[in-house]
Amino acid sequence: MLRQRIIHGRIIVFPVGQAVMKNKILVLDDDPDILEIISYILTDKGYEVVSLSSGEEIFQTIRQFSPDLVLMDVMLGEMDGRIICNHLKNGKDTAALPVILISASHNLAASLRQEGAPNDFIAKPFDIDRLLQKVEGFLVA
Image (cartoon, rainbow, N blue to C red; front, side, top):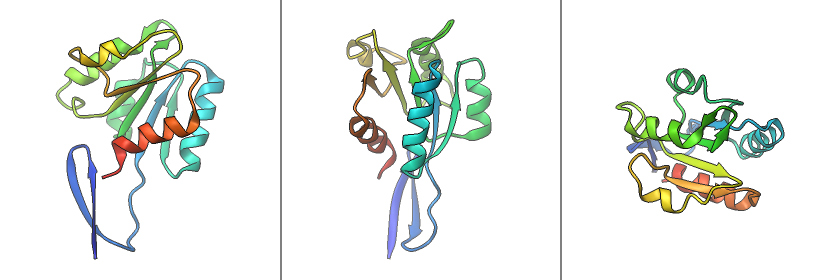
């Protein structure tokens, strides 16, 4: 029996019972407590997680880690997650990479329709089940 999974827009087929690659998630938040909580939750659910406390190394980390999803706070110290998202969505190698922005102070619903917009957003404080539902929605075939 075969099973299908979509990763970065490509269909991957593998036999049931064989080891499945863990989905990789890159998490960015300048709040160390939030970063630790999100990383713990996602790791506990079986995802491979790399976390960054700023956006300065995001492009290098994406090249090295090849995440299946980016989960990023809007305010990253001196950097703006919306601008980073725009660069990702307009990049040749990262345009198809799903990005979910997290924000406590910005209503991002309207920005989902703009060029370079994230795929989705989550408002802080967030419900853990809602976070997992949104993440899984982009990673499960």
